[in-house]
Image 1: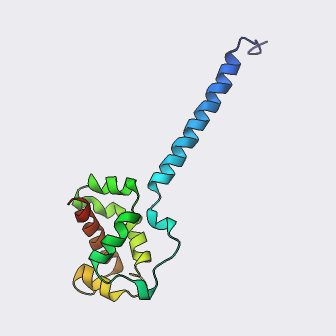
Image 2: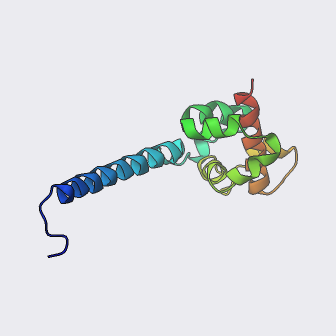
Image 3: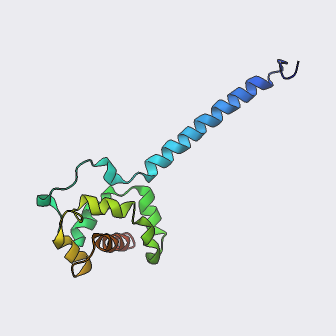
Length: 134
């Protein structure tokens, strides 16, 4: 019969397949851990009473919350290419610091004039980038 000989190769293939699956799971879990923004581990959005009102305050609060992956990503990225962080880190910034909920003082600090929350979060990301490059 085809393929039913017990020469040990089937056992080797099963062990190899199981080992490969475990390695893939480990890589997936490690990647997920490294790419999950630190702000997701903090389930509480800041209340209006706790909102920072300057970009400097946000940078001080945000730096310890950013994952090592995001910090490395920002360190090796040119300032002109920070736009790709709009939906990840930028979304976290807009949500946590109340940019969509009326934190006008922070928007004024970021832009210097009333601007869209997306634009304010871009300015904050640039300030974080600057802080990482000091």
